[in-house]
Image (cartoon, rainbow, N blue to C red; front, side, top):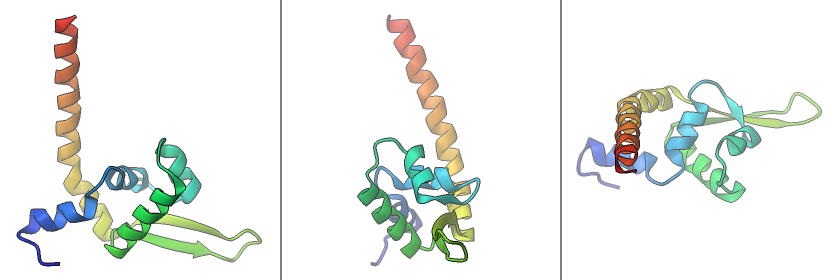
Length: 111
């Protein structure tokens, strides 16, 4: 898909309600599917699986299967590219927190 600019290419990767929240869940350490799902109330298993596959295709998330134990498990983590994306989104998160504060202040003043 040809992009118009770098911002267009970046937004394409995080487009949608859940991808940025999935990145947030994975930014500190690898997590298993169930742990990610519990950290994102409201997401269905189907949507989480789909979003993780898309992020893996976009080279942002790594899926690692462990078959060395009696119970196979899968962990998801951010790739180096995913860590870069998380850092790029940090200023947006800071802006969002500030916006939440301002909106709370305005609500307080109105009541």
